[in-house]
Image (cartoon, one colour):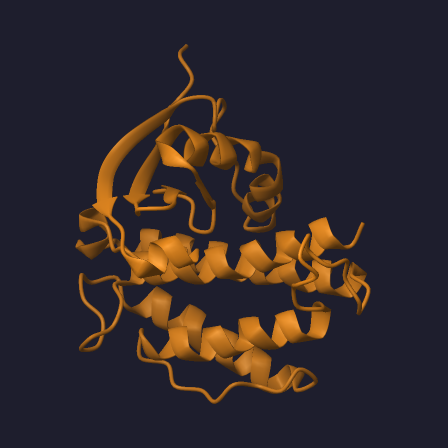
Length: 218
């Protein structure tokens, strides 16, 4: 039986290409050109498998071995800055309640992975080649700030929680998950994000920084 190809969106910027697994929010990596992005995506399969397991899901056999590019998206400054910023046409369509629940579960799993990584990460991280990069707490604060902005894109309004306010963090995350689960239709609030894209963008940002912490802890 042939392995199932992993469906991906390719977002094409002038400097970077993002490859995003269409069915697995958060499994997104960038690279130079299409091949570089797909190679990077494949190399992160073992790390993303932890998210799928946390969500009680199993990646199909052969995931990351072959890819099917289902959409090519024009990138912009967000792409070249380093974030997947284009909404795929497929993400604008309606979701079943089961699909909406699955996406929300994977986003919650990404947070669980982040929390474990944070607990195991030293406060000070190794610096980049030019001496840059946030330390652990500043990185977590950055993630929380981004999530409070992302939440508004799907109708959940929260001020950025403080790092030590676990109740506020849980409340914001809970509202994001509830919004994803309860909005399986094609649209979100005016100027908002479709739920499929919101799940992909939120989970990508969480995991990108979780994996950065792991890489810079050694």
